[in-house]
Image 1 (tube, helix red, strand yellow):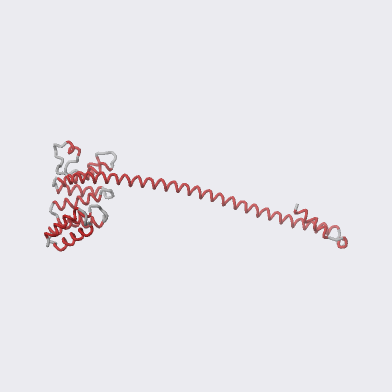
Image 2: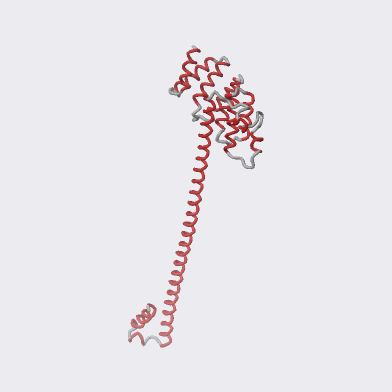
Length: 265
């Protein structure tokens, strides 16, 4: 419609006076040229419209693809977050369970003996975690806890050499275990019990460096002071005890530190 309107307008603009100036062929050529120009403009406009439409469709396709990918990534992220939370909860539950049992062993005066029914389930002295793990097709944290618990039972029974070997084997076998802090703590105590004060002191110092937020810090500091005192490092022992009292004033270890400090004056 727009094309025909331009043609009519061009014809109307030619007055009768001027019409005589052009022959029929010239008039037809002029009209044809105008029509061709209009058709070309119309074709260009249609091409631009198609290009714009295609660009919009391509952009919508890209947006939909990105949205789908974003939803997929969000779903994967939620699954990973849920899995991490579940793993952290399981580790925490195992840690609490073992820590409770270890403290019960430490506070108890009764050690399972060979005649005790519970002792039969424990690995024999000198058995390494490798040997225990090999008895099960699939290793699980419960077995790991039992191996570590055995080390503390040996420690409580004053079998210091065997306890040292048990904790050392555990640390080598399970370096990424959540129970490593307990194993290192037990190793330090076993060395101390075996009168290897220098090695025990080194273990305790590294323990506090690697696990500064451990709840066993007051006990470790107290044991460090005892090692230093046994090594005749009186000044260092005093400083360690003062540090313990200042940092953990309400702990049971602080009360013991007060008494021990009084003997060093």
